[in-house]
Image (cartoon, rainbow, N blue to C red):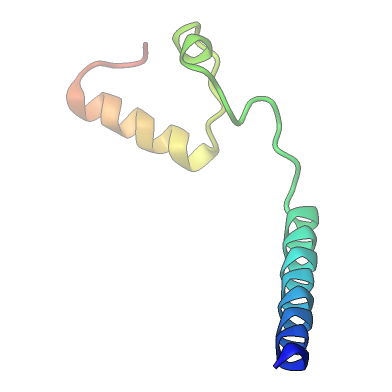
Length: 71
């Protein structure tokens, strides 16, 4: 019984190690987050924006449709 539990524990540790290594590989492959990607409400209120071109087009279209125009 003791040997079975030791074997199960070893298998669990091995699996956790593989998961951790895979997570590290994924995080290393992702580009670094720039400071402009996480804007606070104050930053947005002061006019700082970091929109990709598609988001900028969507926002412009919404402003045209609602009649607000650029702010």
